[in-house]
Each structure stands twice: as C-alpha cells, then as structure tokens.
Length: 78
Image (cartoon, rainbow, N blue to C red; front, side):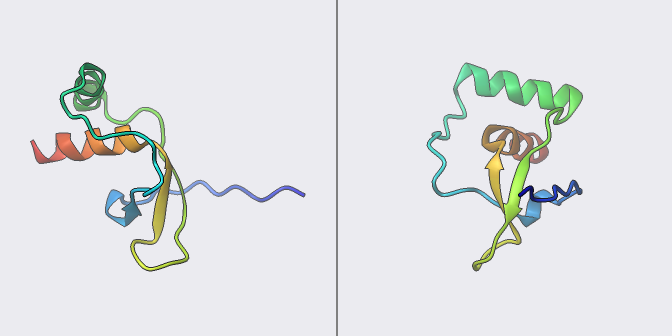
C-alpha cells in the first residue's frame, strides 16, 4: 500500500528541528561554512523534507535538511 506524497511550500517558521537528529551544530565547520556561502549565492537547491507534527509545537518536524535549514536561517540573520 502506497501513501500519497504531497509537495507544498512550507514556511521555515512552521518547522521544528527533530530532537532525534544525530548531527551537532558546529557553525565553524568548514563544510557548514561552504554550505552557508552556497545558500547565500544560490539559495536552498535541495528541498527540505518534513512531516506533520501531531504534538505540541510547530505544524511540521524536519526529517531531512537540518544543516540546510540552519545555514539558511544563519544567512537570513546575517
């Protein structure tokens, strides 16, 4: 049985980070800095994947794209 996939635009403000994500948050990592520069120049090229949140918090939880979202948020605040 296949579940229907829906593609839609979601505001980053509606996305909670997944507390089970194994990655750290090293903003000084050279790969993170390169990602940040890429997003600054070209935007986010690979879409984030989220799922609906059925608990308290924002409407969606991030499944894939932790570093992309963090880098995009950092670019936005610079």
